[in-house]
Length: 568
Image (cartoon, helix red, strand yellow):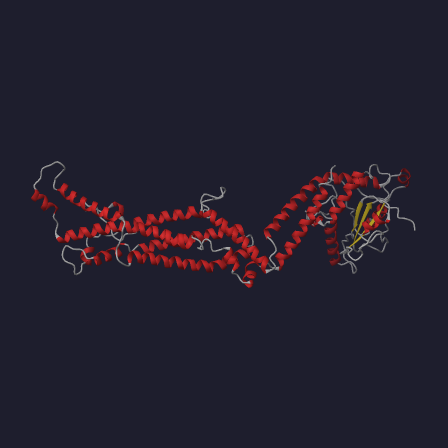
């Protein structure tokens, strides 16, 4: 049998050059990886309407017979790949993907399939590197045998086999080059005249020269495009995270999230902030809760007392300045069976309870704001840890149950601290109370003496002094109650403020196992399989997307390895 003559390009200078052969081979291998759907590979296209001679032209170029007749048209895509290989049956077998003379393991041979495209590979020493795709031609008027549906199918075949992957088909109709000059050039194909045949005018030289120069000019951009696409695809794959099909994969995935969250929470509590965070970022948790504590202490100092205390001179103490009454009449409204001039402990307890009545509301507002700040922190850190919106919402819904428990515990602890301070016996071992009370009593006596005009070093009448410093039993009791209550309130208000910060917010919200660190590996370890599936299970679309992205990454990496070998 006569061997096919192959592509008749022997007269083209440099076509058989080893470098050109390698470049054309790389383009073919890259195209076989399927990345031409995303990357525009260099190519030449033979374009024309139906029955305009495209297949005839390709037959003349490849030496392979195409179905050509006046009543025939191409009905499917045909791809012809020509490769230059060394002589020998083994090399031919390897190119065709079939067992060769040296093949031993016939059972484990790769089985290859073709989908929608008839692919013909011709390999041999008489061939040159070239890939040709024959696609159906477009028709413009529908008939009984060529419908609008057929035209849509042809357009999709052209889109897949020929068109630039980066642009839409609608933007790529053949240009007449009448308004905007084409950058890559184009030419019409016509039958040679008798003189041109005698002169040896041939299309092959122009075709291969154009093809190689086109590849050489476009290849650097192709390499950059493959690199960018590989990086983007890898990022998309990282966003999806690892596979989460089984319970063990789901638990492992959630455990990694919990560990990342725990580390972020620990850094936020120890003031190890990312330097790129905004000044008022919710992720600066310790800074934000410290500011809340300062505002809470300020509110307690300004609004924590129901009545305004007075100075020893009888004027309103500016330290406790706020709208409201004073304690002048409180004693008279609280007197019981005690002796005149004495103070019953129950009276002090009643008056202190009234004086500290704003504490619950102030502390409750502080705790609610504290919880809101922590919740915002949790949402922010989870948003940076979990990219899957559905999973993040599911996990936050799960954590909200635990958050509700911690919120209830914090409110219960607030009630306990309030009851300790306001619901029982007034007591303190803080020496500041005794020192303050003694100092105030001395200041009262000195204030009355100065009011009588008695100064240090001056002579005075003892009886006048005694009359000046002596008060009625009721006035003495009122002053004692005021001074005792004022000294005790100072001590207790600071103690209550500290206890709320330490025992409620730090212990029940920021502490170990608290509201901030709800998401932990221990919590994940206790989840049942159905809970894991609900929280971390991925749907079919996500699983399919991961598989496709992983395959694309693999192909792009192979294409990148091939492309980086090309040096012009």
